[in-house]
Image 1 (cartoon, helix red, strand yellow):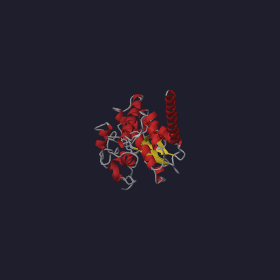
Image 2 (cartoon, rainbow, N blue to C red):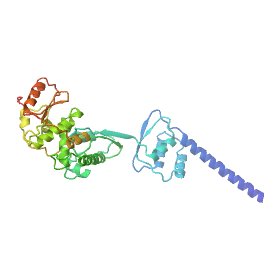
Image 3 (cartoon, rainbow, N blue to C red):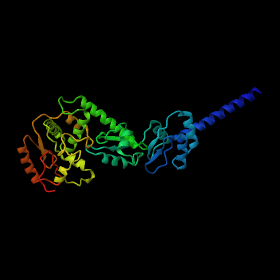
Image 4 (tube, helix red, strand yellow):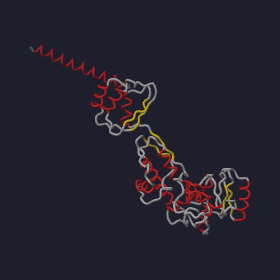
Length: 350
């Protein structure tokens, strides 16, 4: 009787060992199998997806086999591990185990959007709207509501976002990217404002941001930012009008068609610095750190004018007479992409 019981016990244990060994072997084989792919593809994992549901889905799509063993493996060895939502790149030769590791580590596909120095808010919003992988929440939302959602209610949106390359994953909201860009702008502006030169003609950092946006739009050669800033700061100190074309263009809005006429220079808009004294009421573009730095650390000197050579660089002058000679010299042979700068009103015909 005892021998019989021992034989049954040994037999049962052997059966258990065999079953466990078979299950282990099946799990291992299922984990090490390569995904059935001929070319790379993306796997979209929506927020709230479960590993069990994804495993079943991949088997239905013919990308793997043995979903029973894979589900068992996850419950036994990966219970409690977080499955990160997003897009995952599936490559030929990738094993199921490698896919599981990617799910746990959150190795999702990232996209990028570069916000460019000098863009205005219309260009920024158009670039956001063109990102198919972003969740679009701002269509039909006006600028005032946009700034409320960003966390700066009552602020004008122009210039309030920092130009840089931002990375995002599928399903991220467009407003989340803007919040990042706004925080970055405020951080950079605060850092540069804290290290500003003394005696500048700005009441606050917002006025410095306005000046930086003008410098951004006027600068064709990065090395000239400090010189251009110096000209504008000295003009403000002497109560001279800034007379800078980018402010005229901004005030014209969508009416601008590539050319400024004499009548445009005389049009009384809040941004036309040929008409108004001081600076416009808001920035006219997005600005990088270099332009902000130039506005707060302008180069010393006595120049009060500059005119574009037509190649992006400028000729700087201390007197009106010198400046008019430079204007005559470079306007006579100016190119189609010529950009003017602070100067008396042109005598071109309207």
